[in-house]
Amino acid sequence: MRKSLVAAACAAAFGLGAAAAQAAPSVSVYGAIDEYIAVNNDSGTVSSALSSGGSTGSYFGFKGEETLAVWGGTKAVFKLESGFLADDGTYAQSYAGNTNRIFHREAWVGLQNRHFGQISFGRQYTPHFLTWAMSDVNGLSLGTASSPFFYPGPGATMGGSDPTNDDLVRRNNSIFWATPSYAGFSAMAYMAFGEADKTSSSNGNVYNIALQYAKGPLFIMGSALYQNLSTPTPGFYRTGRGHDQYYELAMSYDFGFTKPAIQFEWKEGDDTAARNDFWLVQIGTTTPMLGGRLNTTAAYYKNRTLKKSDAYSFGARFDYDLSKRTMLYAGVEALIQEDNAQFAIEAGPDSAEHFATSAPGNDTQQVFVGIRHRF
Image (cartoon, rainbow, N blue to C red; front, top):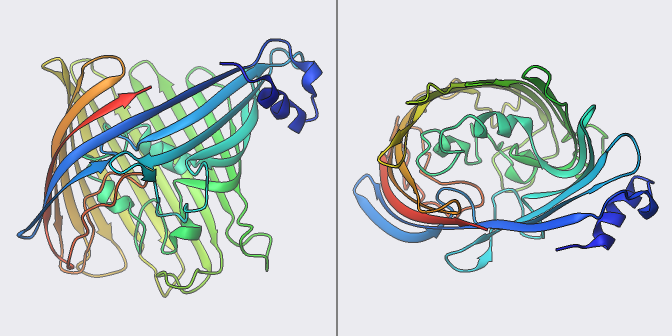
């Protein structure tokens, strides 16, 4: 499929003009449809549902590139991506205020060159999120022990106390620069403008850097993120401004017969009304087995602000590929919580609504089976 007008517009946005095109632009359509059945036990209350987005959110997108006749093979690149719920066909009403967005997962345009890397502008994933997602054995989805702690609210690891402004999975108005890999080493620099708070040019801004080493079987990545909190949205936990700092380190090593991984995250904040500082650690393995992959994880969440708010979680999932595009999966996940913790087992922000845990301190377990098809 070819849409020369789209690619020409991308080039024009950087002042290059349609005449600079060296080769015909290419645009592709891609996506995934994911459905699963889950049975959830909330301290004796059993519920079941057919849901969307167990191993990945259901989504569709457009991506493309055009090689330009400038700067030694520089390419104009773009991506537009939107999520939906395959169980009922509706838009994926993600937690981060996405009800009015056409492409809430990603929407960006940029330039790519083998010498300077890639710089892009728009709504994009943060290196903070990528550090965990790129090293997690399940890619941060159902069956990942740490997934209950990513849901937004006080003490959440990927979304703050005001999820309409504090979402740390992806941000609006961002600039993302990723360097090429040199002997396995690469770096990422990211900045997102708050813009919603017109009283200051810095309120709501996010600054994030990451370093990565990926060569052979070894993967190491670290991230540091600083967020200036903006004016809180009424109705959410956060009541004031301030700032949050997040630090992550992730490692994995592929031995062939198994691939272990470990991730660690630390948060410091100064919003005293909704402050929940924490640390989180997860260990996991992915092991080839019976023609598929057995992925196992265990995590511990330590709330450093509130007493008796810690939690433990465990997950196991078996993935079996029917083809290069179609996969079956099944698994179990369990969450053990102290008296004041109230997390819930969930698949991800672009998945169907999770089973809410009805009371603090409740332990929950879930079994699930699903199918995913990529196109």
